[in-house]
Amino acid sequence: MVSTCPKRPGNPGVLILLTLPLLLLGAIKINCATLPDNSTDVLWLQAFRQEIISDPSGWFSSWNSSANHCLWPGVRCSRAHLGRVVALQLVGLNLAGQISSSIGNLTFLRTLNLSTNGFSGRLPPLNHLQKLQVLDLSVNQLQDSIPDAITNCSSLRIVDLATNILVGEIPPKLSLLYNLSHLRLSRNKLTGIIPPTLGNITSIQRLVLAYNNLTGSIPDELGKLTNMRKLSLGGNRLSGGFPRCLFNLSKSLQVLGLESNMLSKQLPPNIGDALPNLQELFLNTNVFEGRIPASLGNVSGLGRIQLETNNLTGEIPSSLGKLSNMYVLNLRNNNLEAIDIQSWEFFSALTNCTSLEWLSLAENQLHGAIPNTIGNLSSILDYLYLGGNELSGTVPPSIGNLRNLTFLGLGNNNLTGTVEEWIGKLIKLKHLNLQMNSFIGPLSSFLGQLTHLIDLDLGNNKFEGPIPSNIGNLQQLSTLNLSSNNIQGDIPTQLGSITSLTHLDLSSNKLTGRIS
Image (cartoon, rainbow, N blue to C red; front, side):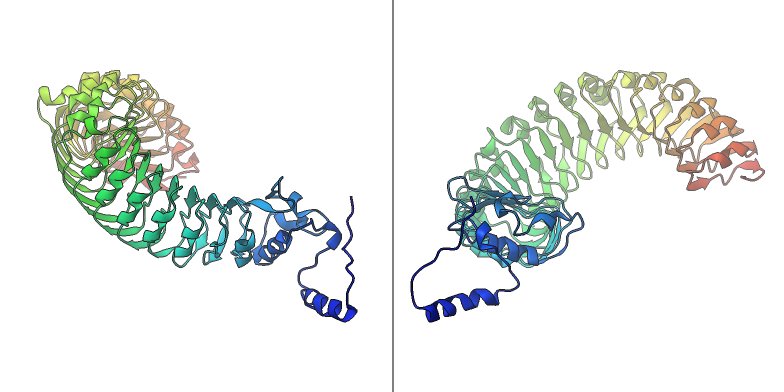
């Protein structure tokens, strides 16, 4: 039904004075016939639109007065309150400009999601949005600090301001948002400490403050957040030992990310018993020392363990073999040891981890032969990195059973023997690194079967004989290093057919000819 502007009796002169300001709003044209009763939200939406300087997808082409604003793309209105906007969702449209302060006048707004665009400038004033429950402005270019006034939005359940350029400290007053379940401020330039007052938001389930410039220790008050399922504080400059206050979250905590900080001292021996519901554990790139707690093997649901780049010592506990759900184990770049049969028992235990897809034990102090049980590792293993140890002897032929490998790194060891027996079975390999060993014999013709190879590094070994002509089958090859071997003969013309090749090193061999 078409409505008309209401007519009211009164002094015509007064009517002119009242309508004059509306005429001066020439930049915002509103057809009174399409304006829902008791609603000015269309004004604020149009003011918001005017601040957009780039709309590459033409999203706003239908934002005009010929259609009810409740039908505009990205806008949702209330059913109970005619014309009042309750949701504005414009996600991933590459919009650019500033977020107009007029957004703060949409007082019925419950959801504001402008994520994954190019908005810049300050956060808009939101202190009048008492009904707002979801605020997602992540993945933009918003600057300045987080205003205290955001705490006036007392209904907020989700706040996501991640991946912007926000500076300053995290407002301690965020603790006034008692209904908050998700707070994500990661990948900004926030400084200062983690406010202890955040421990008062007992409803919170996900707290993500990772990859900022936060300093100090992890406050004990976080131990009061007994509904916490995910705590991510990685990529800061936090110091101190492992926060034992988190043991209070034993019933809820599933994901713990403390990676890339300056945390030190020994890991608590009972960490696995105190946090029995963990599914993912990120403690990598810190300064933790001592042994890997054997109690981690008691966390039956643990799927991901990342302890790389610390100062961990001692043997790798065989108890990790009990983790049938584990799909990632990264212990790279520590000082872990295996020097005899007993200290290698963990490797056989890992064959029970049938979900394992990613295993890195590189850059430790693993000595001796690679166990024959390597061929009994998970049949879905995709990534295996044992480089940078003191491994010796020949590579067990059983490694050829790992037919889903796309990455195999055995470089920088003392391995010997030939590679012909097993290499041709790993037909899914994309990255093969055998450099800096003592492999002997001819380059296997089986290499030509590895047609998915992108990187092949066989440098600094004792390979001899010619380069096999079927190397031309490796049409996805980007990097080829055969340097510092005893390879002889003519460079095969087929090498010149690999158009994807960007890095080639054949130096320090006995090759002749040219690449054409």
